[in-house]
Length: 234
Figure: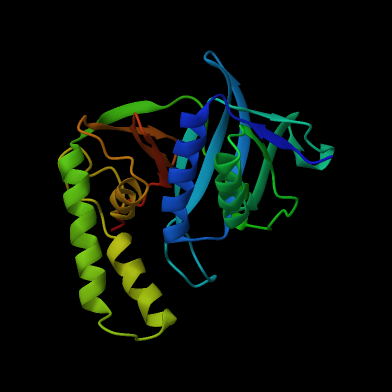
């Protein structure tokens, strides 16, 4: 039996479609759906990759986007359960197709794609608790940092120079430290600003920067960006 994502209302369905549409413009491979239960009730954490190493020699950090939606996943297959809850990667394009179909037919039940892409990033699980607040970053600072990085990448790869050179330029730009008030000195990479911008997470309110172990999290009311700290070495 096919697992079904049951959404609470039209707004939740359309917000999910917008979020995944933004993610698809970055990378159209897969999305990780993780059923979670907390104080606020059942939810589904929707994870997407923004930056990740493409080869074993790639120095790119893992930068993930996550947005939680008030939804449930029904009729999961045993193979999709981790610690008793649904946790699996599914094709992102397949999700977008199903969301578009559900909108046309005014439905809130989304049959999940049956394919399970093997994605190394989807096996990476940042901590769910014990986050320590480090500070706050103004939304305008995140947006400006993202714009500067995008411009730097464009200048570094004018025209069609090939995938390898493009990836090299992106790695150099987005692995640089994010040197803005509230972020400096914590090992946060510029790619976190790009993720917040590209996924539509930047709001008028400041983003909260937190740490749990080696992980850093940039949080707004629209979503979270998670990445591992990259501290300078002597």
